[in-house]
Amino acid sequence: MHQSLRKSLRKYFVMGSQNCQTDPVATLELAAKAGITSFQYREKEKGALIGKEKLELGKELRKICKEHDILFIVNDDIDLVEPLDADGIHVGQDDISVQKIRELFPNKMIGLSVSNVREVDQSPIQLVDYLGAGPIFGTTTKQDAKQPVGVDWIQSLRAQFPNMPLVGIGGINTENAHSVIEAGADGVAVISAITNAQNIQGAVEQL
Ligand code: TZP
Ligand code: MG
Image (cartoon, rainbow, N blue to C red; front, side, top):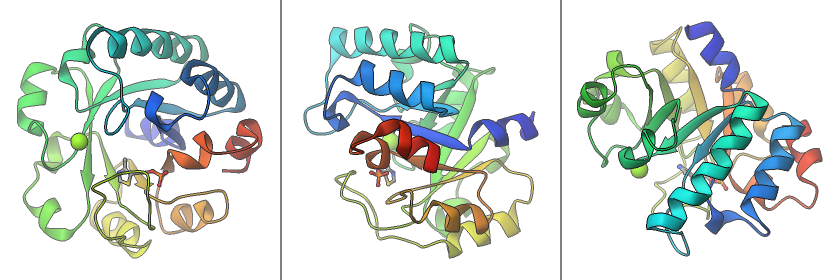
């Protein structure tokens, strides 16, 4: 299970309509055709859809992932897990607890963001299916992003958890993605490297 998840996290596209220059459905369709391996629906922050519109867009994005056999993860929003038949849920340190999600959804994948040693120490890592480490580099995409931690953080997590599926996130682009993989990550999670690309297909291929 770990091995196949590690593979599926290789090119992990994270996005909501607020990140897209054009239609989010068209954006995901292009990225899916170009070879992303996982997708996280992260409809939040400035300009994000809410309520029914958020759900309806989620359904369209979910469908694309099914067609292309791409993992579909929702960010934070436990209310979307069942209606969208998500494969999993990704949470940060200030969101609903991992224990609670595990209780509610025994069979869904759980991803957890960790930015430092303290967060690792206070988290039930044994309940988590994969870790998101970051922000690795500086990013302007997430409004409340913490200070960048660099690829050293990937190295140290990999040393502590040799078999844990692990992705880097934050400021990763086609130029620096290799350094995240070389440090021991299974994959790279990106928003703007894809949503802001002139050529989405080319960007996904290069990652
Ligand atoms: N979590 C940590 S950094 C970040 C998230 C969601 C934003 C990543 O966006 P980008 O554009 O890939 O830097
Ligand atoms: Mg969160």
